[in-house]
Image 1 (cartoon, rainbow, N blue to C red):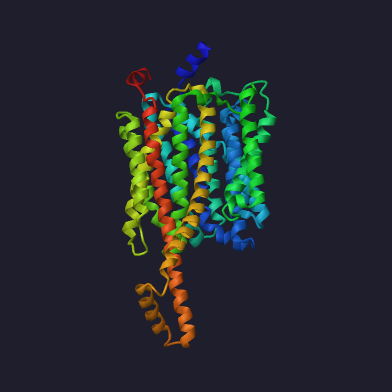
Image 2 (image 1 turned 90 degrees about the vertical axis):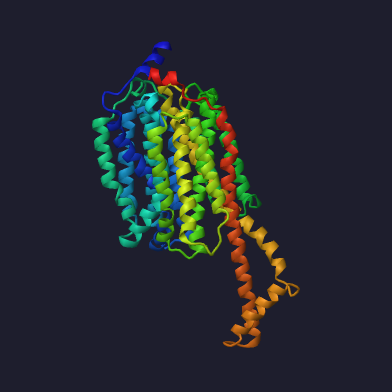
Length: 522
């Protein structure tokens, strides 16, 4: 074991790590971009396929479910095929599936193509993270993760903007066709630049954990359906939601137990014995939940409450991408000189502060009131995501990176799905609560209400009958009340996102930092 450990520690790629980054970054950016680029085009796709808005959301769900199933099996596929071969196969499948998405002429064809696209792309991001962490010495991992931050933070933010522009100026199939040249370029570069370290080469007598794979699929699929449809079905008041959630929980437990007991399991759960990995993964799950939840509800607020178009709402989130880019560059310059834990704490504080700032908006705001909190939010995310990834794996061996990255990305995907679902539920529930409070003011005993009602009533009575004008005036004031209650629902949800970031800050003090002697050895 000591010889293997030495090989894992001392292995270095023959080519420059920065060259190795190019195909992995291209592939990773393409994969993450596709998770959000189709969001604003869903109404157009629904029209093309004669599908409802609810049915069109399965175009997103199929992609997330398929990629979520593939992520934890990455380490097993790398042992079976060799990591470079598996990466190239993933690129081929993803690129061809993207073409099939673009030419799909029915909803079932699109769902099948998106599922295959998710299966092909599921292994890209964990391999991208593992290759970058292994290729750079410990003292340079801050710079490597700064580049990786371009993928995990900026890509999902600019996805709706690019998707909105393409949909408005070209047509929605081009959202998928643009993957074809990028995919084949990444494939060509991967073939010529990537190399497998000794522990990532193809191994003999690799067996598939069929039991674990079955319960993994059952767990992920049922959980995604519950999260995707739970709010519309009133959650556990619906028997079928309760049944699916029970199946998901049982499958999750059986999967975990099988991975612990089976010597040839899909994933190695022993990495959770590492304190840095356990805490770092937990923090990343919370951050991903906050990131994707805010990305889901902010465009809704701008479109539903402020009257923005799909493209303008996506464009309004661009300051967040600019903030992330600024933080990424800053982290690349100082992360190897400053304690990463300090950067992580500062980043989480800024994200929390931005969440609270968004939680005090109203319908009379200017664009600058959206831009500044978004920039701070993006800056905080960039400042925290990059250090936490480096800190979470600092005490792991290189041979554990592929497995660790796969498990980490699986849990982040689940965290993002849970965060998005909870955000939608909180908006609905908080809106109902505030509506019940506000409706108490719609009474003749309230002078402000009667004055407003009489003013609207008098204005409308010039154009219609006296009784109908009274009805329209009351309906108008009630509509304003519902609108204000919905605004309060959005604001409460933004504040909770901020609180979630503040809550995880104390856990950062339990992380082991990157010691100076480790940097010198590297």
